[in-house]
Length: 183
Ligand SMILES: CC(C)(COP(=O)(O)OP(=O)(O)OC[C@H]1O[C@@H](n2cnc3c(N)ncnc32)[C@H](O)[C@@H]1OP(=O)(O)O)[C@@H](O)C(=O)NCCC(=O)NCCS
Image: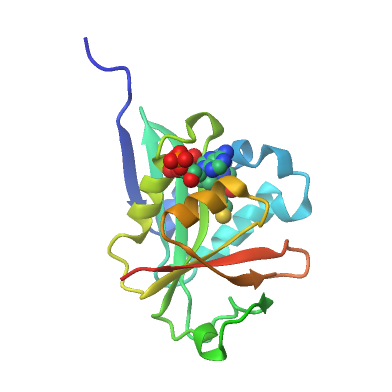
């Protein structure tokens, strides 16, 4: 008898691959963020607009995770461009030098999600590692809501460090900023 545990498959994509999978990516988003979809910042339309912006930047990368041919989670990010406004709205102790981007220094992880029924099995960790594996930037950064205990616990246990707070847009939440040494 063969094992009933399906093999987890990770695939890598560029921006074109993201557009080709719009329906699948949005379907996962809508399940993972089901409780927040009425918040104007978290509607699927606003979410997709943000993905389209990320996909325009150099270094954009998407990794998807599949079980038996079904998308169950993904992670994506891009290289912060020279003079990036990423750090606009930053509150913390970092020096101006630490907040300077040259187009090669930092990889921003802008999404990581796994369907609720498949969480807590190490799949997000695998997606995270696949996204960052082989990156040429010296560091990665991301934003997480301070009350998002599952994500914060995961990132801190995977080697991320606290790096102040950041509110990227006027109607966005105030996020906690985290930093990760890639190499
Ligand atoms: C954050 C998220 C991607 C983690 O996915 P996952 O597949 O469960 O993560 P993994 O199984 O790889 O890692 C699990 C680790 O996450 C942390 N974690 C996950 N759920 C947790 C919970 N309910 N409470 C505390 N820690 C939790 C723990 O560190 C856990 O490690 P452990 O199982 O050894 O204790 C998932 O909870 C998710 O999709 N959340 C909604 C989207 C989101 O908030 N994304 C992050 C945006 S910054």
